[in-house]
Image 1 (cartoon, one colour):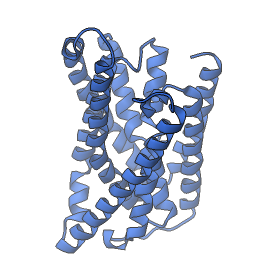
Image 2 (cartoon, helix red, strand yellow; image 1 turned 30 degrees about the vertical axis):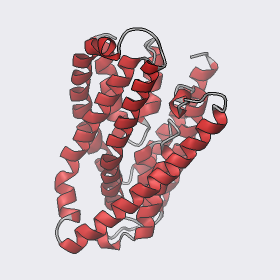
Image 3 (cartoon, helix red, strand yellow; image 1 turned 90 degrees about the horizontal axis):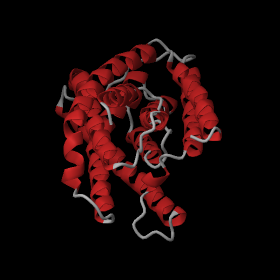
Amino acid sequence: MSLLHVIVLAVVQGLAELLPVSSSAHVIVAEKLMGMDPAAPEMTLLLVMLHTGTMLAVIAYFWSRWRRAFFQSTGEFRTFAIALIVATVLTGIVGGGITEGIEKVAFWNQPHAWVEQLFDRLDLIAIALAAAGILILVAGLRNSRLIERENPISEMSLGQASLMGAVQGLCLPFRGFSRSGATISTGMLSGVTKMRSEDFSFALAVILTPVVIAREGLRLVQMRHAEAGASLSHILRPALMPSLLGAVFAFLAGLLALKWLSRWLEAGRWHYFGIYCLAAAAVVAYLHHAGF
């Protein structure tokens, strides 16, 4: 894994993680095009560090907005906290249930299977990208015909927050089904304003990211226990510094992506991301047909 590979993957992850275009789909395609093995232990460490970098970018970018939107009064904070907890619980129920079902059905003869074993399937990624693109396109075109009135967070109902959390759970097992694209679009379609949908979607992401990182770490440990060979620390030590550098580039690319997303969302260009996802789905489907 060269330094150039790390920088390329960090920029791809930072941009695509926070834009509604599915970072996992782009990272997996980039890894395959560069001849890298997405399942290698050092790649898992890199992915964990890239997720950390983008999470820090979300916190840095949204902190002042969250303070204005959710922390102005005790009542607003309580409403926000309850909505966040309920939505996150639903994410776990929906995402965990689907993941468990896939692992039991698709890998019924493998006692320690992980759904991540399907994440390099370009045919499945193409389908998920197309589904996300249609959802984003519908939400964007519908919203462009509406005149929004900015509402306080208290006017985002618990039902709307719950729906966004459930859809976030649906995104977890399917690489290519953009988390930010699906949750923001769901909020818009359910009547939440664009900016509130964006704020709440990325607040959910900050809660979810440490769980994703922990799962990746657990999977890495179990994978090494199941294999003979060098110790995990011996394998990962050379990848530590490149991964830390990748986190820095992912952080910077993430800040750029968030500014881009907010600007297009405010300008009524959300549906453009849907068009891109549909085009990306076609490209990924072609790559699958070509044998990548």
